[in-house]
Image (cartoon, rainbow, N blue to C red; front, top):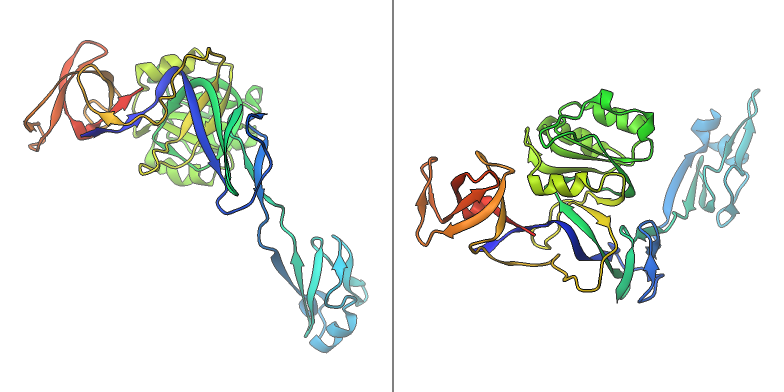
Length: 352
């Protein structure tokens, strides 16, 4: 059985593909060094159309509105240029909400076509461009610590990590956040209070990392304008020992927080990348896939041992019977505290 891989490592070589969702222009070159916020590719979006209801805005009839329209189809206007009016005692007018081109003017309405800013693809992590992906993006390589999680709200940021994690089983509460954390990415424990997200937005923070989170928080986290990443899962779960050591020892460093959604087919997980200097003898383990085998470090992803890490002692050759009544291929695991447990292989993921 192939082992799902989760990366929790203090130092490794990391290669990441950054691609536009549709064809565009690449603006970096192979071998170029980039920072996390550098734009590496961009694509022009389809123009947006805005319909201005002149008659309603000026409180006049359609015929009168046509007489008050000051622009003709094909004209270019800039933001706040006069479109129609003035009308009435108060001299009501309609101005261009954005720069663009008049497409249609008549029947009491004006249709504008406005250009939207190009879609920009940011590097996401500091590193070196090792390959270009034609019309789409690039491959970026860096070295550093890597900690992957289980859920993200689809956003990304780069900034200083400040920890509010006193122990693997800490809770993060609203009163633990204050203005001294402005612009930081905060690492906290379990959270079940939506007001934490509200306080984070008010400060504002650049991102939040939860060890675990109550399921009721999901819709609030999805609406957040900053990245939210969950490391262990939903419900109260302490942080595994390996991840705790990696993150706490790097407190105060700049990190790349990519809270993208899990995609098992592409091997994508939400993750934290902590750029660190290293030698040239590191191997790229970020895309490793292999079978379970004795001696491997693993993390248990289901109850009753969820979040615990250990090593595979032996693999069963025949299905084992578990307390739930199911029979499945499993393994005997030695946990970090030397406790011996048996776990279905489907409840394990390899830790690198």
